[in-house]
Length: 508
Ligand code: SF4
Image 1 (tube, rainbow, N blue to C red):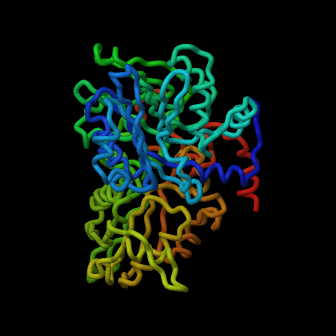
Image 2 (cartoon, protein in one colour; image 1 turned 90 degrees about the horizontal axis):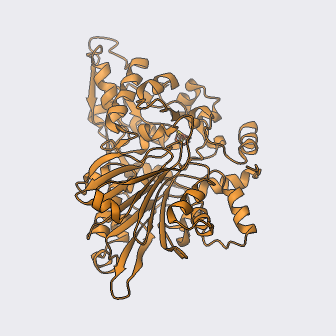
Image 3 (cartoon, rainbow, N blue to C red; image 1 turned 90 degrees about the vertical axis):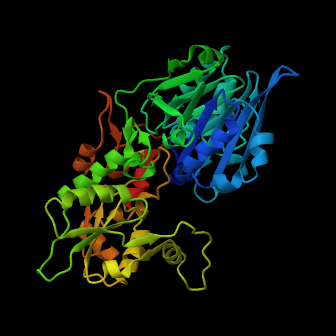
């Protein structure tokens, strides 16, 4: 493939356009829209800026299919606050849905909200995408040269055009041709008039699960979306697989499977286990809770909690940052308490779940106010104690610093920060919104843990090592491996223009 170099600024813009998202699809259910609504509700953590549902409705009178759509900015609850949208507008037996997260700017554009819906010579088609394509500039230029007009600034739209432009006659072949041209991370649901497709890139970067609910077939980014509708998890959509559900599937009870491409090794996003996925989900064929506890356990083995200095000292307290480090903290504490009887697990931070807009006075720090409205300390638990905080990661360090400031106000004796991942040193180009390399606190301090700790205001700071992280995750198949690029800069899938980007970000 022709390699096109992007200017760093363009890459940045592209990066900020794309986002981490949740996808859902259901086939053959009279309550398709309502079940999709619940599925999206369970996937809300994967995208909180916009949500949408598209349904396929068979119009008996005219003997043709009609696609219904509703999407808007906001949380699932507010986008579908009027139940009539689900019952009167989004009619039909099949649906796909999407929750979207994006950075400021592109996220404001209404056109970029998914699912996307088009009408082409093969009928209606709608698409929900989680992940980032990494050859978007090449594809965009190619399509533009062929006269394509774009309605959005997203990579997902490129897939629609590739499908629409295919000369193949069978729909399945059109999709296979389109996906043979895209590179990157993608877990996708596509709804056509009478078929539902679920596609995952050959590296299996983002999760996508396949389930059943009686005679209905369902797909979701995480299995917590199955639990909420009582669907049964069957298996993952395999990396490089395209599953097709159609009328025949209802008769036979089984799916059709095609291969869109193969990779030497799978490269699942390891951050899904560290932070992104919900602990009550299974992703990459393993329970997130189990893996996250193991990560916490390995952190404890590498970096135990301090004990008492004198018999009169109060016991050391281990606290979690709710809710993101709850599970890792359990793993951490259950391990250290085996040898350190002078430690207790406590709730030292309280999180408010009702944080809305933050009003600030001139001169006030908005981020500080946000942290204060979100968290408060339980002073009696922390005062005069050695406090161990377990957190999942440090990115810019801004929130961690403010959190430490808040904890210091409760007058602990010492504050030890334990991070259940290695230092984040590089952005993600596969569907997660990370700041640029220059903004990452680990890079600003040459990965010097002591310096970072000083900057954050803690007595000590420790990260989980890469080796122990790799020991914590499951290896279900011969080909199972993980993307760790944000900790290692080893990007497993080619990214156009990355050389320029690296030069700009790391050299100055
Ligand atoms: S770079 Fe990091 S966040 Fe992105 S896919 Fe790889 S491991 Fe996941």
